[in-house]
Image (cartoon, rainbow, N blue to C red; front, top):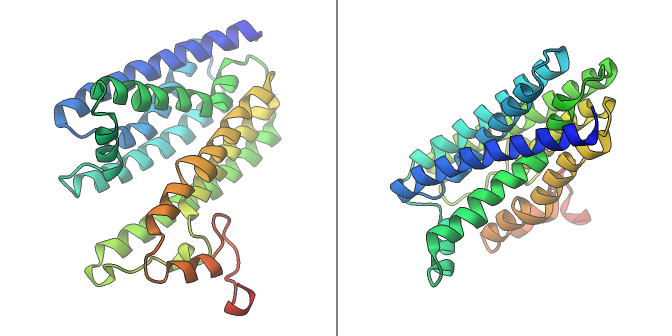
Length: 267
């Protein structure tokens, strides 16, 4: 594999992502539910992975493993968010606010370019380790594959368990207005985000055994940056600021990495 072949695989995969997200945009526009893009986020990774796999055409253990790992993660995340979306008839307030912000412009075009197309691009970049691995003809390192799968399994288990615990907590009407501070949420304020970051570092480890492995690291580095500094932790923390008990929860609980609960004396 040379750099040109890798670039071609990336561009074809990005094109597939843009086409997919464009179709989702058309559906969302008809529904007037632009938050459908949240469901598409997990699915677009599957589209990118399948496309990169088909571009090369070769079948080996690493490629099959990546298809399975991304497929499991993407479908689980999409179904989880879809259940949440179906539970309400109102659009997510984030997109309602964006509508108001961009109403002086071409609202639909702004949402399409700034949200749907941007997410297609970000997904392709996060998928860098997958694309690098799919484009490579080199025999990949079995030890790195094993370690990467192990790290991914840890991350997937944490994310899926955290989401399940939170879903059950919210579904109980007696918990209305309360903070979720049980299970994994006792040790991290955002265990689901920690699980997602961990999974993508697992995928990044798998890609370390191929040429241009350093390009593959763009994926886990980007998703880590987005979750920690942009679209994950910061807006969630902001949304809960001022809630009863939130300040105390912040003081005693790790922000991302699950850790021991801090005592009041050490807070």
